[in-house]
Amino acid sequence: MDQRHDLSAEKHAEPGGYGQCGQYVPDDHRQQDQHERHGEHDRLLPRWVCARRSRVPRHRPACRMRSAMKSAMRTIVRPIARLADTFLRDDGASTLIETAFVAPVLIAITLGGVEAGAMYARQTELQQVASNAMEIILTSAPKTEQEGAATIAQVKQYAAATSGLQVVSGSTPAVGQIAVYKRYRCGNNSQRQAEYGCSNTSQSISTFVVVFMRENYSPVWRNFGIGEDLEFNVKRTVQIG
Image 1 (cartoon, helix red, strand yellow):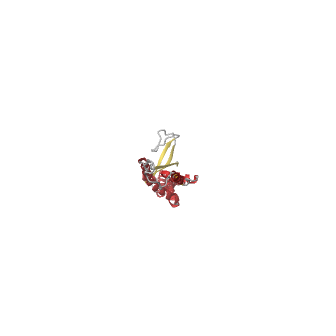
Image 2 (image 1 turned 180 degrees about the vertical axis):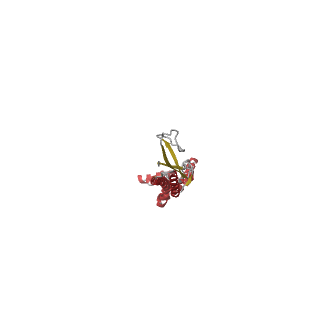
Image 3 (image 1 turned 60 degrees about the vertical axis):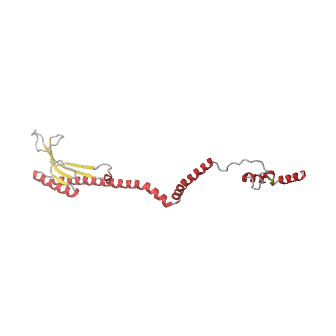
């Protein structure tokens, strides 16, 4: 009887099989590694043969919480990752994003260049009108008051037609107006006066014709509330007597 029991125990304890209480006896290191990875097989002896074994729950509350958090993170991150991957892989989307950043800068530079050119052109135009008016006065070379009045009328007509400004009488034109008037100087005085004649009759009287133009220029960025209007003041003086 004892020999049978010993033989049975040896049979169950031989390498590669199951021993008493269902323990697995590997025959080499390879099976030992597989046993450690996969655990014991379900092929066990009856429970009354084996000793009492403690059973540990396979899933603990902390593990369940970590698993739920990982699942929630995957739910949030995956759509964002897919969207980013779509933009990175799509050349058209990359070009669209680059254009969205670069386009406003290019538009501002273009508008600034165009407006600067327009302002310079208008200023140059007014200066050219004033220079041509001076040439008309010098060419006419009026000697009398009647000739001077005729020359001033001719200059006013030319300046109004060329510059597009409104001609006014007097010496203080408003914005968008042009004035052509006379001034006088007694002797070597630095100041000019509006009336003909000097308090010292021994002093000589010099006669001048003044062309004064005022113009406003409103850049396009004023429509967006940026900056202010620019005012051009062009004044030229020529001596005629």
